[in-house]
Every structure is written in C-alpha cells, then in structure tokens.
Length: 161
Image (cartoon, rainbow, N blue to C red; front, side, top):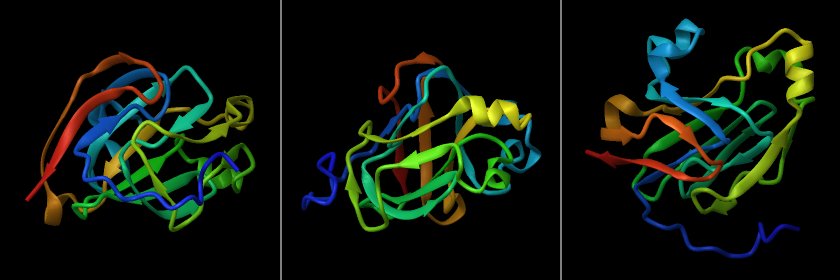
C-alpha cells in the first residue's frame, strides 16, 4: 500500500514543502481571519491548482481528520495541514488520505488527494494552510519562497528554538 507502513526513520529535515501545486502565499492573505490573524499559529498557504496532497514537512503523522493532517517533526515542531477553508463541514467526503496516525512521511511525499469539485460545489474555498501550531513554544523562524510552486517542491525552511 504505497510504501506507507514500512518502517521509516524520522528525518531531522528543516525543509518546508508545497502541499499542493499552486501559488504559495502569505498567511495574512487568507480570507479566514482565524488563519490570517495567526490565531492557530504562523505559517503559509497555497492557492492550489492540483488535487494531489503532499506532506509539507518530514514528520510523524499525529492527526488524520477529514480535512486536515497533523505532523510532528523530529525537532518537535507541530505542523497542521488544513485543506480548504471551512471544509470541516464536508465531513471528510472530498478527501482521501493515504496515511494514518503513527506513519512517518518524508517532506514532499504524496499523502492523499482532494476532489476540489465537491469543495467548490459546497461554495467553499480551496486555499490550503500550513500552520505551525506550537509557534509560541517552538518556532524560531521560517522562510518561504512565495509564488508558484510544484506539488511537493521545496519552498523554504523552518528552525526551532
């Protein structure tokens, strides 16, 4: 099954990856104020042009919840991948994640797909956020190259305190 479940070693990788092909944008440009005001933490977002979802970091999968995946890097940085805005209301219908809690993934590795036609039919936005949920405790700094990126491509890096 896609190589997941095989014993991988958690890599201490500081790189950030594009979770989908599209335009990488500043978090402040996201229409949802919870994300734009960084209430859940700092990060970046993607205006997607593809339906394949990739791991934004090399990490252990800590959460698989319908519209979102949670990761914990080797250095303790917690990363939330929130696919679409208000997509929790779709009860997981448009999402097909290939990972489970406890899996170890490499940054830029395919972890699932999304059916954007279902998201759009519900009148919801496709903007996808990558949030460092323990920003205050753990994040030292991060750099992201904003602009068009290929799915799974390296877009920056993040360091911890």
